[in-house]
Each structure stands twice: as structure tokens, then as C-alpha cells.
Image (cartoon, rainbow, N blue to C red; front, side):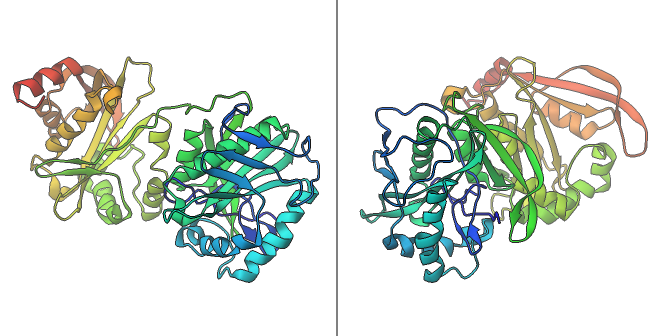
Length: 444
């Protein structure tokens, strides 16, 4: 029986993967995790007591190798780890994002350490390690678990879960690289898969950081306490590099006089839907794929890291700087189009935030990172474009107020909610134009 496992990563929140990690009463719970591909290096010491091949049974703990890099050690689990395992399995994020048994206690932990983990090793089905590192109090102890599950055909799933005390310290990234080196060099694996429940953003970042190539969505694939959930997946081949395959576009928090740009949040839901279903929005944006129901909004929120992690788009909430109340949304997309260092901008505002100059302020704020070089932490764009339907005088006025130049029109391509089709008026803004404008205003 394959159950989901914890995957709370070192980078901060939760890393759900489907490969193995936490206990299930009927067997070893599983879930994959982040990945990397390269040979064992001098600094990643692999102390293997037996020459291993995929599927070969090993004695536990006698044949379990010790893998070391810096402060991070992968080793066999011990009874002394049970307290840390119980603490991790009762952590709110573990409970929320994984299928660890609810009410996890020392009996569960003891069964896992003394029965399930040894069985995994002796059956040859799984390489399941404890992670040990130095905690914030300066003491070395159990820091999580990480596993490669043999899927046959030189394929494996990787899974991990970090103790809450060591998240955000890079421990899980190091552990993942260590295990991948071992899996490729010693176990003969050719490919490793990472999977995570949709919304497991931090796990996705670890997969990205360690060189995984993201795939699409697995529909109703991941078992979560009896429910089949959609998931993400990514692949790493043994010959792949360990560097990220895309640029992760960060979504900086930007503060202006009357607006704040920040990441979208669950608290935005009601006003976001009010904006999307407002008659004016419906007239101009009815055919745009904007979430218009609570379910659709929650899905979009869960998937908010997909665009940034693939280097294709970023989205901000426009909020009131004092109350944090949702005022609108602003996106940049098409970063990976064929146009030279270009992207497109899109926006919409809540009815009570219109015609107050707030959208103009928000766009001007976003132009800063858009035209800042990558070396300085920006997006490195040379050109930003936007389109507004013929007759949408408000959107066109905002474009001009932000310095965009009308460049032409796409004829009869923009369909409206009333069934009519109008021209799309095109605008763009170039980096040299933005630079001159900011220098003239003394903002450089």
C-alpha cells in the first residue's frame, strides 16, 4: 500500500514528495522529492560497504553506508531518533501536507525504526536514511529522513522530510544531492522522479534548485489519506547537470505611496472574485482564463509558483499598504517568448479601486524590477508590452500614463462578453525609455 509521506524541506515549509519518508501503519509511506544528477565528488564521501546494484537486499544496519558532506550526514536510523521523528510527524505542516498517521506517537515511531525501515533495506526495495546535522542549539541530532525507492528498470523515486528545527538551513538540499550521488553511482539508477502535491511550493523549489526538469500535472495521482490529489512531477537523469534548468523569477514585495505589491494570498479570495466577476471586468476579460470561483481561486493560489519556477511569469496582488486589502492584480508573462528580452503585462482592479490612479502607481512600481538587470536581481527585460481592447479607454489611458507607446493594432482578434469582436490596441515600453523617464524624475 503506497501512502503519502512527509517532505518537509530544509528551505522553509513543506516538501511533499512521493517516494518514501514517513510511516504508514500498513507499510512504508512514500513520496518523492527534489533531485540532482552528477557523479560522486570528492566532497560528497560515499562509504559503501558492499558493491550495490539496483534491487539488491542489504542488511540493516550493518550494510547501510554513511554519506557525508560538510555538516550533513546520511546514516542508518537509530532508536534514539524516535523522539525527533514523532516531533516531525506532529508538526502542523507534516500533518497538512503529508499522509503521516494522525496522532503519531512513540509507538508509531518505534514500529517504523525497528520494523519498517529494516524491511525496506533487507527487501532491496528502498534506500532509506536518517539525516543528521547541527541544530540551532548547537547539538547534532536527527534532522529528517530521505529515501530512494527502487521502481525497477533503473528508476527510482526520491522522498524527504525535514525536522522543523532545521528548515531553512540548506540541510535538505545537501542531503538530496548526497543521496542522488549515491543512487546514481552506487545503486545504478538512471532516472529519479520527484513528485509533490500541487501547492507544495517549497518542495518544488528544492527540486528546481537541484536540477530537476519540471513536467506537467499528474491528475488525481497522489494518495492523500484516501483521496487522490493532483500533483507535480519532475525528472532527473544521471547525466543531467545539478544546476537549475530555468530561472526562478522572484516576486519582490514593492511598496509605494498608496499601493503595495505582494504575492497573492488566501485572504484575497473574496475581493479577487468580486473583481473577476464585476460587469466591467466581464465585458473586457470574459474570455481570459481568470479564476472566477472560490475553487478556481484556490487552485490558482496553490499553483502560484509554477510560472516563477519555470521562468515564464510572475503575479502580484495590488494591496492597500495600511490594511493589506486586495485592490487588484498585476501580472507579467511571456518571459520565454521568441521576442528579445520581452514580456507582456496584464492587470485588473477591484471596482472600488478604479479611477483613483492606483493601477498606474502599481505598474510603475513593477517596471523597476522588470527593467533592472538580472545581475542586480531584476528580470533583465528590454521591452514590456501590453494590449487593450478597442474602446477600453481606461486601460489605454493607464498605458500612456505609464510611458507606453501605442505601436499598432491586431485587427478583429479580441472577443468581448457580448459576442462582439474588436481590435486589440498594442503598446510597448523599452528599457532606454524607462531609464530616461526615471532619470528625468530623479528616480535613478
